[in-house]
Structures are given as structure tokens and as C-alpha cells.
Image 1 (cartoon, rainbow, N blue to C red):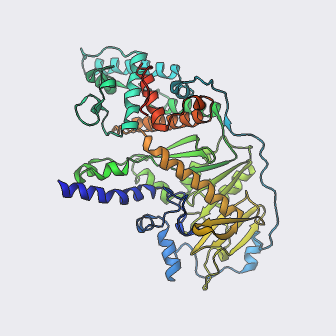
Image 2 (tube, one colour):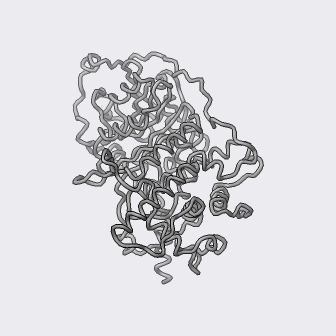
Image 3 (cartoon, rainbow, N blue to C red):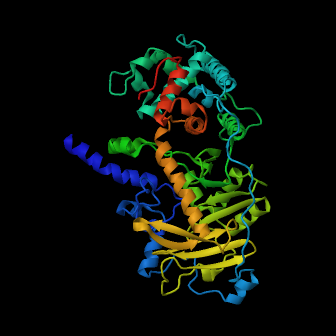
Amino acid sequence: MAEGGGGARSRAPALLEAARARYESLHISDDVFGESGPDSGGNPFYSTSAASRSSSATSSDDEREHSGLPRAPSVPEALEPEEDEAGAGWSATLRDRPPPHFEDTGGPARKMPPNASAMDFFQLFVPDNILKNMVVQTNMYAKKFQERFGSDSAWVEVTLTEMKAFLGYMISTSISHCESVLSIWSSGFYSNKSLAFVMSQARFEKILKYFHVVAFRSSQTTHGLYKVQPFLDSLQNGFDSAFRPSQTQVLHEPLIDEDPVFIATCTERELRKRKKRKFSLWVRQCSSTGFIIQIYVHLKESGVPDGLDALKNKPQLHSMVARSLCQNAAGKNYIIFTGPSITSLTLFEEFEKQGIYCCGLLSSRKSDCTGLPLSMLTNPVNPPIRGQHRIKMKGNMSLICWYNKGYFRFLTNAYSPMQQGMIIKRKNVEIPCPLAVEAFAAHLSYICKYDDKYSKYFISHKPNKTWQQVFWFAISIAINNAYILYKMSDAYHVKRYSRAQFGERLVQELLGLEDASPTP
């Protein structure tokens, strides 16, 4: 047993790095930042460990560049003549351009009182009318289920108070990080007597059996997420009405996998039994606060590979995701940062016509490079000095090729190619770069720090049904957003709860234990 435990602990750091490597769509090599600095803790973009590099989705491209091996076949070896590029509108003549005008001040859309509770912030997104609908739908489903499969003498219709307690039990798993919510009633390490007496385990299991957000499909419904889509729509309305985002935002997949240290303690058999998710979850996130503005769920299509793999291999699907996430952003002069799987000239030009500006990392393997000058996508034989770059423009669009122990390319219409920035690495060594490169690194760095901090508070309960998985992920995001609003409110100055304390307080209030105080 000792050897097994030691092996699990030794696998934990590698699994943590593997989890962080899920930033497929945003990944920028650690070479952009050089060596990790004192303020780079927990940020996969700064990581220079062997495990991080080996798990990086773009490391193979970097190795090809360093070793002189031929690049991916999507980039031709021969350069296209300069006159052809000029005919396509690309020119090495640069011109300055002002940044997109933005006057709105981001932040909470309403002022919460200093005595506002955790429940008050949570109900900005999940109000009582939504919970009452869950009560109605759950009771309807239980009735129809029993009409079809036989009566259940132990079932009594659920009430609003019980539904809140049911949610509280589920949310408690995000604080304790236990895999099974039923551990609350056990005598083991994750037992919690103060919560267990509110509802019996048998009653909880009955509610869990019949729990529904939408009990039945309507004749007009064809959407695969019909059982949770009304809740997602309501959640989106809550996000829109409660928060005004800053100008800079990021499109990415949040880190929603299980805690890698917890996974490290599982046996190989338990890991094999885990089913792959049948959906991918994408978000548009405010890069200055971490508030998730919009959620998009992409379902696996029948008869095709897993949804995540399909998205990674098909840039057009990534463009569809980006359009869906930005459908409410038109005309507001937002600046959207994207990873290589989304970045494309066609999409950026389409967004610019809608008043949405972009800055994205390019990859010859993942990005749609249609319409880009091939001379900028092919590396010269002799590498330049670190910090040197080449830029070509087409209208307001700039294509940047920047060198820092490797070539990194960016496409942007949000930043002037004439403006200079700086990447600062350890020992205060400064590496010059265009302003767009510095902005990309800074804003995505913030999102990584957000995910490292908040991803550990996703609800641990993992149901088999896809719509329930989506539902609990959405609830987790709503709680994280509620905490962000709490930290920006006067209530935070009255009682400075940490994220864990805020979650504990929310659980206590949902279970009707208002007098209980969070663990210090």
C-alpha cells in the first residue's frame, strides 16, 4: 500500500501539468516568456518544466523549428512572390492606428448592500423562480416515471426548501472535493454531521433520482440539451444584467476536469471506468476580473469522434463557437483574445465589420491560414536576435512574426503595429515586442491565474447524464461569478470571505443554517 501511495503522489505533479495542458486553444509556448519569474506561480504559460513542455500541444512545432526539421505540411517550403502578397493587399509598409474607442466602465451593474449574503449574490443568477421551476419539473417527472414504471411509496413531492438543500449538498462537494456527495452521510473522512441532519440520505437519493430542470421534450424541441437549455438561457440573462465586462475578453475552454491530485489517488481500473465527456464547454471571459460573460456548450454529434476532438481538428467549428460566444458583443468595440484554433483572417475581418476587434495567436498546424502571406508563415534559415519581429499589414489587420527562442505569430486588428511593448522575464531582462504580443501575454496570463484559483471549486459530483454534467458545471460557474461580484461589493469589506468560505456560507444558507459561520 505504501508503494501505491508513493506512486500516486509522484504522479500528481505530472497529472497537474497534464490538466493545465488543456489550454489547447490558448496555448502559447513558455519560450515567449523565457524563464519563469517570481510572479509566475501556477501559470502554465510561464512553466518551463519538462512535463509542461512534453504535454504542450504546440511543443512539436517548436521542436521542429529548433532542430531544423521540416514544418507541418500545411506551410509550403517555397515562398510566395512578394508581388503576389502585395496584390492580395499585404504590405510591409506600416501605419499607426488608434485603438478601438471604449468608454464603458466594467464592473457590477447593480450596487449590493453591505449586508448582502452569499445567497443574495448567488440568486442574482439562480433566483427563486428558477428553483421553483425545478421543483415543478422534478415533481412532474416523478409522477410520469411512476405512472410508467410503477408507484414509489417512499416518494413525497419535493418542496422549495428541499430543493435548496439538495443544491446545497451538491455544492458542498466543491468545497470538500469529495467524489461522492453521499460521503456526507458516511462515517468516513468526508462525513459532515452538521449538514447530514438537515435531510436524510434516503430522501436526498430520491430527489437525485427524479431531479429535472425540464421534465419532457416538447414537439418543437430538437436541441440535444433541451433538458438544461432553459436554465442556461436564464443564467445568461443573469450574467448580462448583473455585470458589465471590460473591453478586453478571452475565448477559451475553462479548466473543468477533476482535481488531478484526486485523480492520482485513483486506481487504473477506476480511471478506465470514467466516461469521456460528450461535450466541450467554451466561455467568453472578462480578462480584467475573471467574470465569465457567456457560456457555449458544444455537444458530441452522433456517428462522429468525440466533440472535443472534432473541435480541435475542424477550424470551422471553432469559428462557429466564436460566433456564438460573441453574438451579443457586436458594436461595443470589445477586444477579443483568441487561441490558434480560433484565429483566422476571415473570422477577424467578419468581427471587425460588427465592431468586434481581435488579437490571436497563430499556429500553422491549428489555425486557418487562408489569405495570409506565406512569406510570413515560413521561418528564415538564420534565426534573428531575440525580440526582433516582422510585420505586414492589410487594412487594419497586422500579421506579426516575433522571435524569442522560437517563432510566434499573431494576427490582430486591435493594436497598432507601430506601438512597442515589453516582455519582462526573471532578473529583469526585458525582451522587446510589439504591443499586441505584450497584451496577449498579459491578458491570457490573468485567465490562467483565474483558472488555477477557481477551477478547484467546480462541483465534484459527476453524473452519467450529459445534461446533468452541463448543469452542475453551469452552477459552479455561477457561484464563481457570484464570488467575483461579492469581492467587488461593499459586502466584502464587511466580511472578507475567501472563495472556500464563500462556498461554505452559501451551502449553510441553502440548507437553512444561517447562523453557522464559515471555517476560518
